[in-house]
Length: 430
Image (cartoon, rainbow, N blue to C red; front, side, top):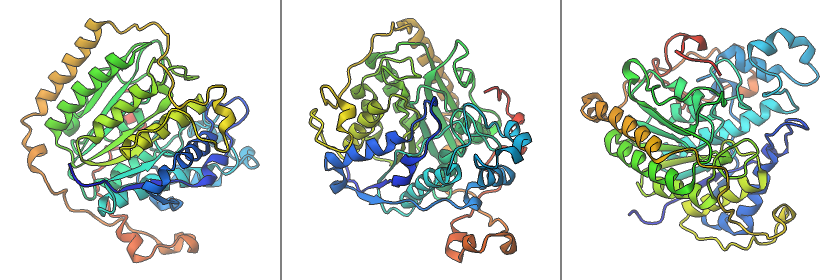
């Protein structure tokens, strides 16, 4: 065990003040609640707290198409009528509404994940946390599932500059489709998603048979679950699969998406996990002592989201938190009992022992195919990078990049799957 980990935590108060709309389940306000809870437990005294930079359009375009980034930059509730034809093309509408400060919101949460990756790359910390990040559904050229910019893909691209192999783990109730799709054809990122699958549940992807293609074959792992999975069965499955993944793939760094909509009682979820069960996954991943980037994700019962991510911040700091929530600005949300932990739920568990053991066997079987793949074990140093061309004249003078920032943009040409069109993916049906 290394001596005390250094933990960097990213937060910008502006991220919690945007509003998706009156009937929209996504409430960024949950991020303010989380932050105040973290402060009320004095956890900030054990971490380095940073305000992230707002990601530049050119940084967002490391993954997203330039026209899509430009569109997000321009669109506002007041200019909607000018962009009516583009709304459908980029999938903005009911699920992904246009609201005030939308682009700045994207810049902040993406900037947090990019900054977290850079601090890990430069070995300035061992664990980096951005609860505002984890928006795993966004596609190269479109919004999806409340997600506009895929901060996780941007963070992973950053990590690939220093690490031959990145492991992505996703415990959101929804399939991490945007991240899987971005790296579906490469063995340099292994994606592992535990999620509800079936009954037309969003986004409709994530069958155990989706395993990646070409160089990426067997480097996408999907663990499709049914309603009502409980702590015991989830944790057992999680530990069995993740320990084998780490042993086989030997990643240099882990990205962990901690969507809290897999908790019992979530507005959009259908699992039975308690906060302790959810946090046990974080504890388990931390034990590998690998560089670790932790993000938020889904979570639509906001007081439980705040509880969960606060407990998990404690886990990452090896700090046990008292169950009585200390007084804070949002204490009224935690009434009547003001307790930190929530019990597991009462949805019937439709995951039979035999179903879970079949899924586990299939996943472990697929992992055996890569056990002896020399490219993964041998390739310690990523291939050469190239520097993209920046046209100085095209850039807003405020966003012109100094040499140091340009150096940080270095990117491999073949990092994304070929073809600019999302429809090239084998089942982009979300």
